[in-house]
Amino acid sequence: MKRKTFHNAAGYKRVLWGLQAVFIALPAVLFLTGCAGNPGGRTEPYSETFFAMDTYMTFTIYGAKAEDSLKQAEDRIRELEGLWSVTDIKSDIYAVNHSGGKPVAVDGETEELLSFALEMAEETGGALEPTIYPVLAAWGFTTGENRVPDREEIEELLNRVDYTGVRWDGGSIVLEEGSMLDLGAVGKGYAGDQVIQLLKENGVTSALLDIGGNIQAVGAKPDGSSWRVGLKDPFSGGVLGVIQVADEAVVTSGSYERYFTGKDGKRYGHIIDPATGYPVDNGLASVSVIASEGKLCDALSTALFVMGLEDAERYWRQNQGFDMILVTVDEGIFVTEGVKDRFSLQSEYQDMTVNVIEK
Ligand code: ADP
Ligand code: MG
Image 1 (tube, rainbow, N blue to C red):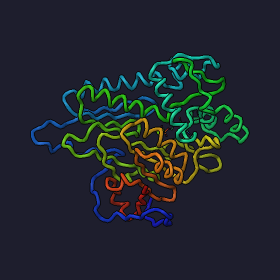
Image 2: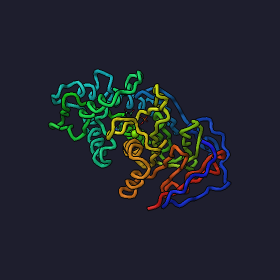
Image 3: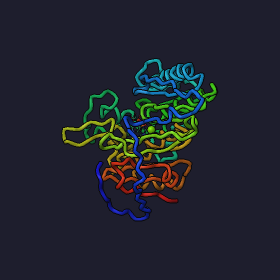
Image 4: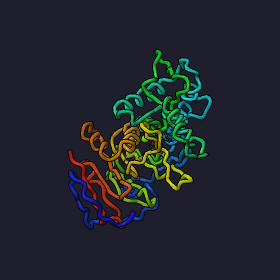
């Protein structure tokens, strides 16, 4: 992304963020400042990176119980991964996906996650579609052997995609034969909420979790100031801006990380528009959602990315309870009111316009 003035979309208040540049070195997507400067207190965090749920996670925890808590947190993540993996033959989701239409008794947490996903599917008019898996697989996103399926194949597969066909039989899930669940769009957010709860029960008051790009914070930094979370530039991979958060989650969905380039030269991303069966191609490059719960952020970042700018804006006006930052492929930045005063562009992006979405 480079400097650019873009067309003035009607209804947006244009705010040009001036020269109060934030001159910090930004080595990664996420950066922590303030490890020092708490006179008299020990503020060195305990931090570890591990691979789970098909992604890298880095947990950074402050306080006396940091190391123990981190081990427990990692175990908790692996426990949930064991329930929801689409490929692990011992998982609940695998059992449901291979049930041949018979009821499958699942763990209470799977039930909870699926109920939430179905509720959000309803809320978002099917933009979030927990049964999209067969289409995702046809595009090769589940194996890495990417291909562009032909239209008939997609049409055929779309007949198997319908979240309203998921039924409950007591604590059992009944999925029509041929239909398949994929809770990948919400699982990491839910898992983050579970880890946060565990940390709080352990008395942790300050921690930052990077769950494969989903950022979730416990409290603020030990010195009381907000966490500074870098927002990726979807085009260059650099850091576009910084958002300040405390006790919140910031989750981004986009097509810039998991995608492939077809023989036709087009880029195809891993988020599918359930209305067409094709990867989202609506002018959005990324959507970040900021709210207190990770699962809501995760569900919404995926769904709003599918909806596109106008519908995302409409959804925000009608629902509230969260903030968002949208970046368009023509390099527009749109933020909701609640973000305006705590988001700042990096110095290289200072002359870009931040459009504020108002109620
Ligand atoms: P990421 O997992 O890359 O952080 P998301 O939370 O947006 O990003 O989830 C994307 C994943 O969700 C995809 O990899 C796929 O498994 C699944 N998915 C793709 N399209 C949809 C959709 N429309 N509704 C629900 N899940 C989807
Ligand atoms: Mg998501």
